[in-house]
Image (cartoon, rainbow, N blue to C red; front, top):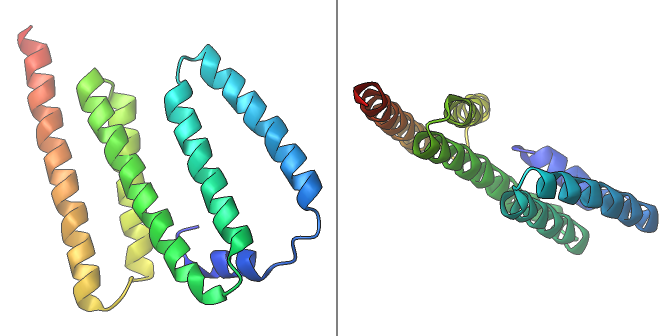
Length: 152
């Protein structure tokens, strides 16, 4: 969903089975809510679910395929935000799986943007500079955090 074409397809697509889609969505969200409650991660999972529902509502509301660009931008920002959040949580909790999953999310987003540059070359260069600074900062914090763990 990091590209404009899938969003255009969703906006222009025929939404003939809305009732069955909402029933299936309610069942899936109920299962996800139950699993989040069991894992004590309700806040994180429900915020992601609310974002999903907001995007679904936006797609159903939007009638102009030109709005797909805004959905593309939001999807990319969400990918970077979730990646950054995972990096921060990994550093804060000392969990390498969160840290490396966040780094992987940022790297995959950067790679996707490399193949399809957003804007012109200056915009692409600025985007890669932000990704590089984010990854350098994450590596530095991880190194400092791990050196503190070793000293204990």
